[in-house]
Length: 252
Length: 252
DNA sequence: GTTGACTCTCACGTAGCGGCAGGCGGGAGC
DNA sequence: GCTCCCGCCTGCCGCTACGTGAGAGTCAAC
Image (cartoon, rainbow over all chains, first blue to last red):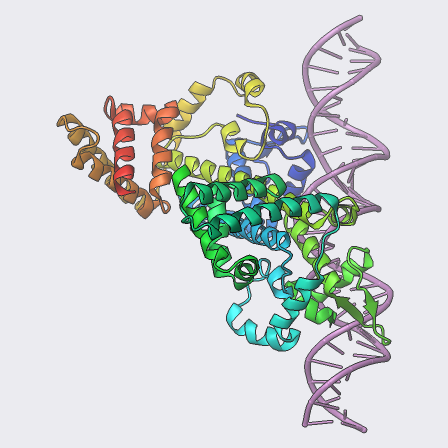
């Protein structure tokens, strides 16, 4: 089986120019040429191209790909395992980014401003330990900084105002249920937990039960979120946390 | 709060040159300069930079990022929602790639060669329907092609031989258990299902119960895998499928 | 007031192609 | 045999998103 550049390009989803380039730099030279100088790729070339594209998709520079593929000590299974490992690392990274975004969305929803470090944490992989002290000194007292920001931050869009109104309405009813003495796993509390989820889904993003319980945990783990709810009513953070979990379990 | 280029670069995890570049192209110009001409970034600049980096990470060209960020019709919440959507799309794509890799690993394990199209399917998003006919005609009879490849494909590494031996030993015991009349959810069958998982984990990649049940489903859904097991013993594909599921459930 | 870390502005270099020009090859139809 | 068009060839220039100095000014500490 021999293929022309055009055929290879079509099936592999790359341009002819790309194949020319790979030939130029010696990353993928066709196994032969016709008498007229046409490139002729065979099945082995296609296999190699597939490897190239996989590593390219994973962000490797072409030169490095050449080295990886030409490594005589690597068998096909090793390539696959390596790709699998790289993919799972990427997957983890992406999931972290999603979590960070969800965190940021929650924060923005509640008018909590993030510190400069927090905003960039998802990008860097610096050590949070030793970074902390350095940051405190460089950016000043973070608590005061956050406090000032919390007051300053404000949205002005009108849909944001509607959202805010709905949010406050929900908050009032939540406080009322809690004040009535109903337990956090009572139907009333769970119904409001469900509404909480739907509010987020409607205004911000599709919020699954799994994501919502994640948020609930965050409300307790991060003091700023806790403070947000405690400012509304004492014990609300824990109460909401429990109601969300109870609701999620009952819907599972 | 005002920051120098170096400070911003450090906290954001980019180089000073990058910030210079963003200033040059007008993507992120510091809000001010000192009398000596030093760039001074404030908190708003940092927020903008964070947006820039997020969209950059998502693969947008800088020019497009400028357009997105400068869009007056977009509020912060919209940015976050957009990023969340883009991330989940990416996540899905990555998960597909992981699945494809796992498919390829299983295929290579069993000496099943993939067709050229299959190898590239993960990259392109062409329509498999109309593509099928075109492919048949272009690449010839695919079944014969696969058959010939199946015979040709071979590993030569010695660890591969050991793996093969272990695999065959496991297969013999699996067949024996099935022939003994024990049901697929019997302790013996489930134990062998567990060994199947551990074999993969030892030789190929960390195989969770979830992944293993995915493989089991594939053994039934893809005729080539089914054929592989049916060639060993009639009914083995279905038996193994059931045993793997039973084992996964009992370990959950 | 000197040192060393930091900053500035050119300005050229690099990777991974895209895209076009100018010319040849090949098979289908006339 | 001739033409036509499509696909292939080899340069070669352009683009993005910076990297990497060079050469010179600046800032804060000792």
